[in-house]
Image (cartoon, rainbow, N blue to C red; front, top):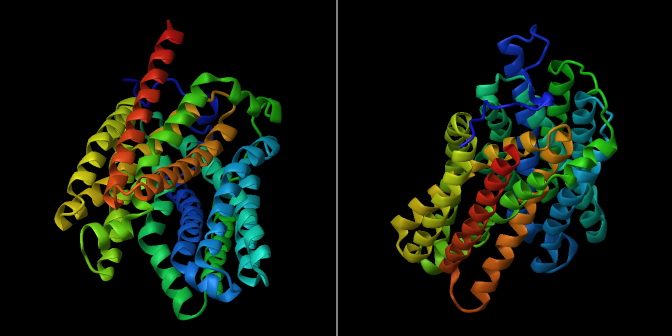
Length: 406
């Protein structure tokens, strides 16, 4: 398997500005992670506030759920479009614009007078999501030595994983005590803090020589980019197939009380954070080995999940380990940056479109098996199949890579 410190694309090489001290780099990574925390909190908090949103606008909960789809659609559309249109912008400028748009979208969402305008604003708020994470990952990787690139990307992603454990519960609690509008104002405030931190700590940068929309769009001409995209869109669908229905699995399949759903969600969040930290260290030793190994691990784990979901102890263990499957995410992000060559901004941003496709695919297929009468525990079998398909695509990409290298 290829080691992460192998040949680096030009845009991912260590920065020429050796004046950046370790403290400055840490502060830049913190600023970028705060943005990830804001985005993660805003994306997931709405799920716990849907009843409040529905009551406020006089719509049903299923209708209110359309705002989640609108946000996801914004992510899928916004990532490649923004990355291509902003090809000639310095990364600092682009990050400031993206996070300002995100913060503004949340402020306007909190003030939206009608459900239609609220739904439209959630779409707009989702537009900068993927591009922000993509550019932030590139900035983090560019400041790290070759053998620590994945860990640098993971530290930015840590903002997202911590949001699932801390930010989302706080925003949900605030929304239930005060108003769901207050929760979005809180998310906007975090976004504004991120803007200030980036403005203060991230040095000005120059646009890469030859940068253009045409060069960025050139990423889509590379087979390896599409294969890496498919690994994420298919392979990580299993995690979402399980997570989307975990509340009902906890109560209906494992027979636990509603109060234990929060515990199960916390275990998933802890697993994501553990996976993010441990997986990035593994990937810095073997990038491809980590991706392939985690996909294979998920094939077995998710099948066990389905077979043992009725057992509360096994449910706790499997949910935690499913969260740990996030270990492959920074590795896949870094691999995509590598295979994109000189079109890294668009490729890195589009990765988050892939994750949102995985979210939609996993939730849809999980719903199909549940509607067919197989029960909530069967979502693990869906996850196992998707992970296996993702592994097959990944192995094909490795074979293609080796053939091209001859």
